Amino acid sequence: MKLFISYSLPPAECSRIGLVSGGVAEYRIRINVGPGEYDYITLTNYVKEKRPWKINTGKNLVILPGQGLTEQFYSDMAIYYAQRKYSVYILDRRETNIPPDEDDFSFMEYWTVEEHLNDTYIAINASRSHTSFLSKKPAENIEVTAIGHSHGALILTAYEASQYDDMPLGSVDRIVPVDIIIKYDPQYPELIYNQTQEFNIISSEIENEVYEGTGMASMIYVASMAYSNPEGSSPYPGLTNIQLFRLMASQTYILSSYPYTPDYHYWSGDLSGLSYVNESRLLYLTLSGGAAPFTPKYMDQFMAGLMGNVDGYEINSSSVDSPVLYVGLGGGFGDYGSWWYENEAGNTNSRVTSMIWNNQGHASLLIDQNSPELWALIDNWIKNTET
Image (cartoon, rainbow, N blue to C red):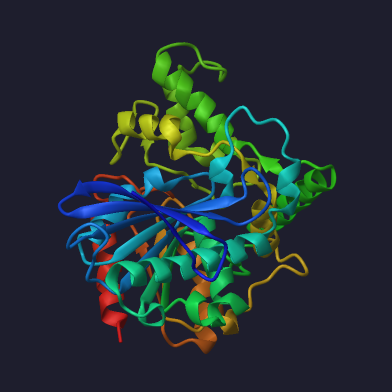
């Protein structure tokens, strides 16, 4: 069944997909946000039903994925929270619509950070309206918590500091940025300098009309070789295809000219295997739509500009006024990310706290065997900050 629902925003098409687990149903909302072929966003909603198109909850949880990742990597997490009486929405941004055979990326010229923030406002507004429609509760009374991971945490933090968060149906009651660096502690001048260099490289590429990032496309390519011919010789001398995939996952910093942290990696492990995560499932998700091959360079430019202390690139910390839980992932950004939240946002916001999760890597929020332990800690914090 499909409904066409107006949110006093662009028209949205809403479908009920069906039950997925323990009374939790999946809905999907597609919203046009521009004139182009790929200018739409998708909200996947997981929520416990009384019956089809009827729920009791008035609490929303909006998840903003990391760049290049789609709803599929976050669905376990969403179902977990839906079982705990949240109406959970995962926002797939515009880049998730681009097929792997696309070769003209001129449309990305207009996919700026401001467009991402506007899309996020549309998504949060739509999430309120959809939960209101299902629950019959007033949209303005729907409480919204947002969790952002990686680039999603960057968007979420910028959103919290923007004018969008001041709009009644776009406001967020509390935020959980997971594993991001807004600014480095000044005691790390080398890391700051490296991101200045990264910013210059990205800016030059954009000036030359290269608007797309292809890092995830490379990961998908390696994953496809690791899946189809794991013991075959990889492009990296001396390694098999599966070993190269493990290297990219567990020693990510080796393959970057300017790694964010000295030990930055996605998952823990070594060439003999990955820890905590089911390797076969990781490959499957990467190859079956869990990863988007092409991402907008403007977001990487924004991130490098912030971390490199580039003039004109900043987030106003005094505008971050909601309760904040920063979660650093050990092996990812970890403690490097907590500095700005504690020392900058925390200067004017007494409701900022932070925690560091196990040393498993930047992606340990997602599908690790012990990820539910982290989800539970976040859930406890949300409940302790509810009004």
